[in-house]
Length: 190
Image 1 (cartoon, rainbow, N blue to C red):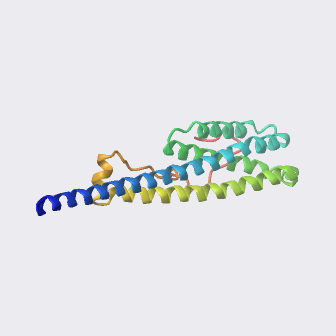
Image 2 (image 1 turned 90 degrees about the vertical axis):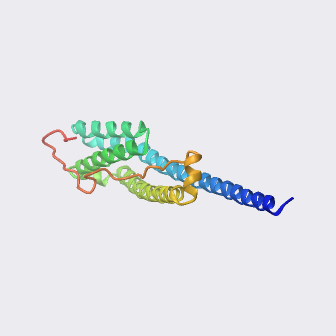
Image 3 (image 1 turned 45 degrees about the horizontal axis):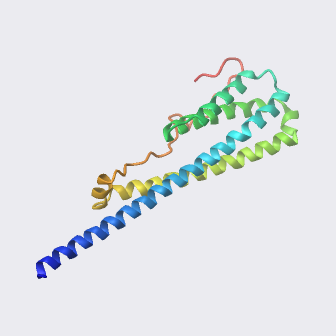
């Protein structure tokens, strides 16, 4: 075998090893993104599971606040039916606003605020909100690592050829920095 043939074989082997290594690395990063997203979904589900108990407890004291209860249930249903990261972010923002309005209702009922069951549910909800924030951050960090990897040269060549596409960040909705407006005299604005 000539030196030229050996050199060509060596170059092909190096390229093949790089391609296999790049592919495996991208698969690992993509799986990390999927894993982090499932953790976001787990925490969103945990919060969603707590909400009916919280609503039922508040209803016992504030039965005439039906509009707030309907908003919470509608937002919860939208979150459960979210099909994408963007849908989940929008539904999550809507649910957070509805929960804020629900907790504002609680302020009018001192006996409810003193109820041990309500306090426990409120504490669990607060803990879950913290877990959601951490899960979102972990997901976005995994997306950042994955998106950066598929854009780096020369991996970008293999990523495009093998169908690796950028993933979407979990982003707050516009206006999420503003506190929700609570108005007990009129229906809530959407």
